[in-house]
Length: 347
Image (cartoon, rainbow, N blue to C red; front, side):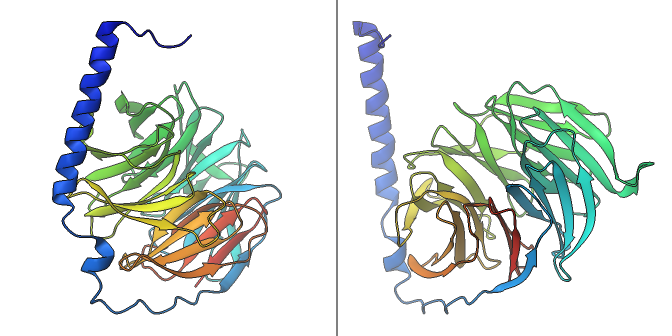
């Protein structure tokens, strides 16, 4: 049924469009200079030459998510084969294999301390495991099963060992207290699935990306967004906070990656892939924030010099779409996973 075109609705729609135009004009006033022209005096970033340092084999189905531990050595991957695997990226060995009750994993997270891993997906819950404690079968102990979602779990991130932040297909963001197993925060955040969450370097704010094409900036303590960022023309698949805490990068289904500046409340640059025929699934920033990496549907990982908006190189090797990538917190390596069932550590 088409929307009603009665005078009241038409009037409201017109008012809304006028407000949006006012906001755009205000943003244009702030955008006094383009990023690439402001950085014209900066030397080009050297070509990044990364190779596959470790090729991690062990999953027997599509690998959907990867996340580094705070020690920059171990990482966890979740696959549709129903397993979480914790890897030592230095040696390429498996540290633990955790069988899951549901094989439909969409997101995994490693706590910064390295003590816990969490995962969730189509089972509509977030399961947290204690890596250091085993049950009678020798598998990591389930600490909590956080249920009560009305949609799939699409993203989770530990705030610390006691609290976890989740985004889900019921458009909600929740913060859970892991000791009590209860939600301390629960609210509708977007007009579509909350697909990706990135915590700020200081841990006080976070950015979310959604199927509703927007990104929002939140304070951990509030349930109202501090800022909303428009610009993408399709699902925002991934968001990644800039190490400075003043900006964040996004990767989208609309075949572009973008950088949004928090202080000027708008997009400052858009990065296009050289092939420009496939969407981006994931993004990450180097430790300095100078290099942006995006995993793509066309099996490659693309890199850009963020200041110059110049393509800096392509990481080839995966044989199917790259689903997720994680940059080690000390900046020394990148882990990527793919539908080709493999995980690669680049350095």
